[in-house]
Length: 139
Figure 1 (tube, rainbow, N blue to C red):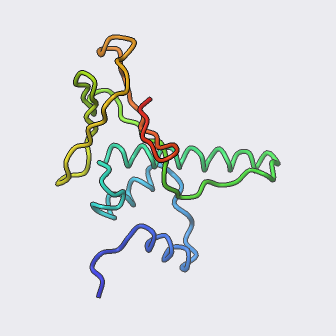
Figure 2: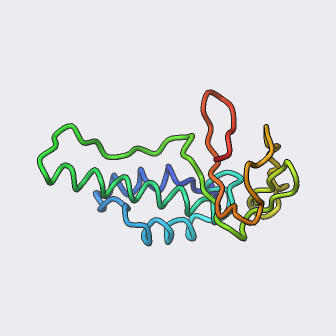
């Protein structure tokens, strides 16, 4: 008997029961808290909520476009490589490195910057981690 249920399994169960899809940010956050650790790999709750916010915003934007008559508008799909944002106070800048928090029990992620910041460290309000072409980028 499996004691661990993945978020993919939960989605499939909801689909089979013909439940309404979870698309609102608060609903998705409730599902995240029920799913427990490991749902988003080594992402901390702040990073996971960032992914949920982007998914929810994209879903409602597609729904609005479809309601306006755009038949080419597509709803977002769960995929890898979604940009993740952390705001001031949740990350640490240390010289040419950025410390990004991870899930409890996992080591923090240190990202080395390819160049120095063109402005003072105090002006950095958020960082966004992107994965393009198999490489990590900070914005």
